[in-house]
Amino acid sequence: MKKLCVFTGAATGSDPRFAEAAHQLGQILASRNLGLVYGGGKSGLMGKIADAVIAADGHATGIIPKFLDNVEIAHRGLNDLHTIDTMHERKNMMYEIADGFIIMPGGLGTLDETMEIITWRQLGLHRKPIIIANLHGYWDHMLLLFQNIIDEGFMHHGHTGHFEHVDDMDTLADKLDAYFPASDAAASQI
Image (tube, rainbow, N blue to C red; front, side, top):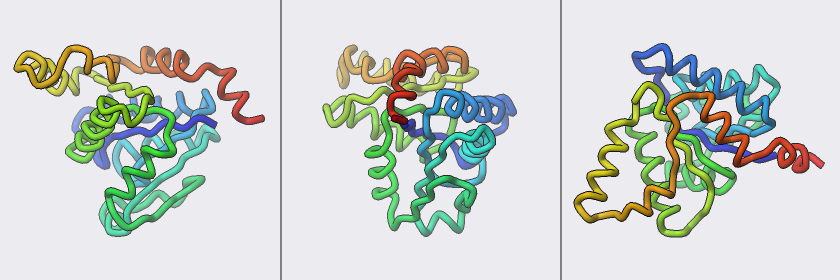
């Protein structure tokens, strides 16, 4: 089974459309036999995605540091839950077992994970797809920042090829189908 790591918030945010999109993403992943890898919490958008994956008989893997289990509270209904010691271990494990990455709306933790995984791709440490779900313009300012970094000469235009961004869930589903065709998912089960 191919697994996609989703970076998103432990909060739901103020726009209810993000919670709807999180639920939809969980359904999309499960319907395509794509496993979820994420931070392991039961709250916020991350919990909504995991709940939707589980409800649709999909596979969800959570990775949470011990100290965050008191804050985010680990999701005990997952297929696999790894409780580890540090944030660095968490990120490394998520990166290693994922076949691709989806960035949904989130806070500083999501931003940290996003910058690191894009930087690792820029440095050639992986070639896995990265898709930024710029739902309702949530990541507009980050994308403008990237353009400013290019304009100021600290990154070249080719580096924006290390990730893609989509504006809606239908386009995200289409991208997943292109990267992970149904025949790949079925073949990985044999």
